[in-house]
Length: 359
Image 1: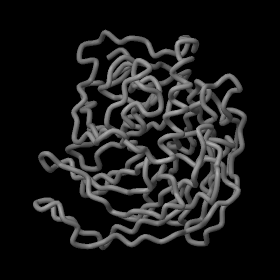
Image 2: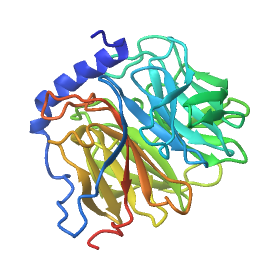
Image 3: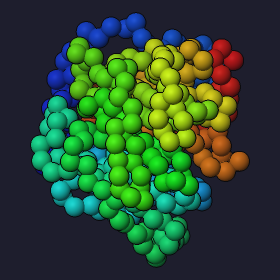
Image 4: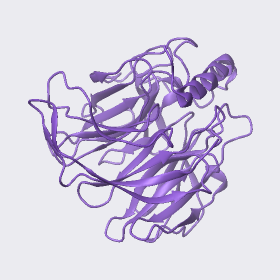
């Protein structure tokens, strides 16, 4: 089987990392929860072939899910309400890009996505530019009965970012103003982008966004979410979950602080009650953070159930507001038990029975 160059680089990194993973300190492991109802049940919507790296996702207001792929520059859509659903391709980007990463929505059904320049096993860009594209889904139409697209999305390049390192997570600052944040995981800072003008700048450059010299990956700040006038961020190369106060323009208004100690987090998502669900890609686990407490709620570093869990998003309707949708890379980041890679998944978990730490 011939792997795409970007996947070859990621697998090379995974082989290296898996060889030293046993040497990583366990001080930031989530505690094992014995409360009734845990672990939460993981349900698979779709599992792709090997290799499939599902990197991030966004839930549309109609419940359909947009999924970014890192192993290929492809944006897919899947309808979780359809039995035996399979993804359909919404857009395929130029081979100038290695894959897609972060995705965020501004106005209803208008999304923005990171298209990554080719990169090596150390996540250093090898050629080209990373770019941000607009995905306008307002005229998109999909017939679930036939799995056919009957109206196309409109794809527009917003900006090239030649000075960016490895762009990753995204979140929306102000949908009306068209301001979004983009994490540069390699450089360890966050850009703000005006999607209307294409102007961008380094908005937050904080020491807690950098990866540690001892980290097995050259990736720092990764997932981004805004809640109650704070920007929350994960760090894949530093075992901390942090936040920093910001104003409506996305500018910092005070110092950053550590919310919780938790290692190897990719992306994360808040439930409406403020519990954060953390996707621990390299240890195949999903943990929850409430206050500063961390608890393992699904998966484990010896299971393929959530192998390489990358990102999560909650349902948009009242009926499924506690349904957490997840993407996985199948263990391409770090294989399960050092050698096992499976197909990337789109899965879901009903989190309703988990009301918080110790409950």
